[in-house]
Image: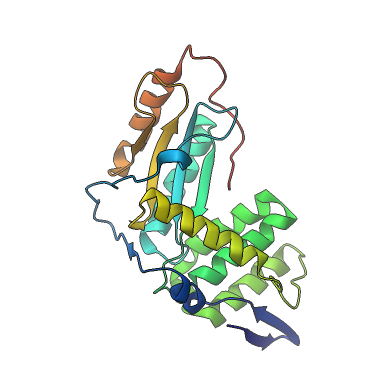
Amino acid sequence: MLMVFRASGARFLVAFSALALAAAVPAARAQFSQPSPGTQVHDPSALKPPPGAHVAIIEFEDMECPDCANANPLLKEAAAKYNIPWVRHDFPLPFHAWSMQAAVNARWFDTKSKKIGDEYRDAVFANQPSIVNLDGLRQFTEKFAADRKISLPFAMDPQGKLAAEVKADYALGQRVGIEHTPTIWVVTANSKGAPFVEVVDRSKLFQLIDQAIADTKGTGGTAAVKTAQK
């Protein structure tokens, strides 16, 4: 589904909408503040740190999900405090009107630099209540780009490659067993403890990371690498 907006003399093309994702994947649900009993993991192959790291945070997020916005500052703080990767997977829920396009936009900013892409994600979460619909997202994105002197193209994803990457992340989440957003794990490699632990109670995030680091000490390699995203 293609949607063209015009603003400030420039046209902004929305390559995919949430409806396109809804047609492609079954519905999932958002988690709003109430902790889940835990995810039943079907395929754990994705629940491991990036190469070179022994501990990492893995998150499946929806940029329109209020609880993802609530979790975002804490995850950013934890990744910085422990200097461990924070792997952010897209899991845009089909009933959210603009989350799919936000994920595509973030990946377009990733092509400029990973830092800019993550700044965009963080800014969307911080300003989420003011982004009511796709038009609001367009206005927010244009201002974000203008503030950084970045020129937006007529079409951010003309061939659908970025949307395909987002959908691949969603499919990965389905294989894992994701049922809500955010779903967060602390994952380890060569650990004497559990290879992955879901963060059901976010007040225990730092405690879980401390335990993961302790469980990987003396196993060779380092837990500290730069923040990563697939």
